[in-house]
Length: 56
Image (cartoon, rainbow, N blue to C red; front, side, top):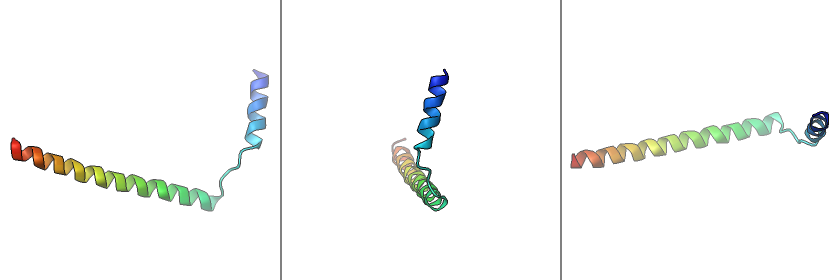
């Protein structure tokens, strides 16, 4: 157990953490992509509802 904890601690020293500027940029990209996908799937959903409504 202690060997595992030591190896985790040693590995965490090798991690390169993002800067605040890079983190904000990455979060912004994730939010923009999420919004675009939500809009896309919303439009597709409305289109499918409209098409099904024509047949029902």
